[in-house]
Length: 302
Picture 1 (cartoon, rainbow, N blue to C red):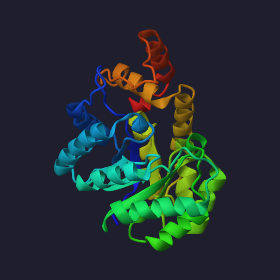
Picture 2: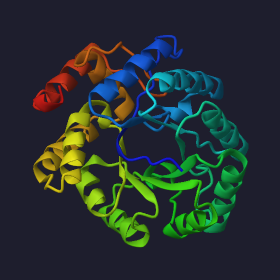
Picture 3: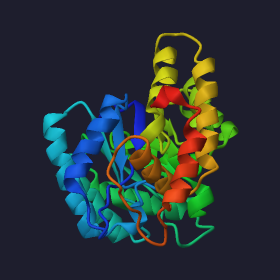
């Protein structure tokens, strides 16, 4: 199983005005993330509008990521591959590993609610057996406020015991501090837990988390790295965490994240004017100007 840790951006997906993938832009953007302190990127997660991107488009992205990987072997590349249909998830997961990505982050099947642990275990076990080769890894994606389908600790324990070399852990985007603490208490370092909420980064690290995978890291990774590096040095990251939490609160005030991040990346960081996929709607120039002003008080990220 690959050792994955640190600050990982839940990357936006670069899309041209006609909704085609800006494949050259993807490589340039991954360089941007790396230069600003990210240890890696998650492609096609929530921030990457994964559920809105077709399987054929995802294949193009995986191929572009593989080309990038050839020149940047130390930059972690993960892929979101979870779909409601098990067979589609198997197809996408196989593709991700055929293109030699490091791991996959997999939503539960998110149409039916109130499903049992047994049902979720059967689904994930079938996926791992069919699509995750030895030497590669799968992370569950716990974001119940979006999917309506939580990943209980009992499920994680069963998957860890059944697939110790292929089930890596969980991206915990619940935003629940008690849950982050419980994950650390139950699993310690046996599973790799990544917080999806920047406000909980220090708290998660104090409870054995392996890092973060967040939308904010697209623009806020200098602060995220301050927290990470300070903890690795055995020092107190409270000051950097306070600024990171304030920055995250500002992003949360401007949902949805793919829209506001793409607007800021263009207006403040000079990235191309990438668009979002409907039903999301791009910001107008007036909205972008207001957004840019709201983030001006964070000079340390620019």
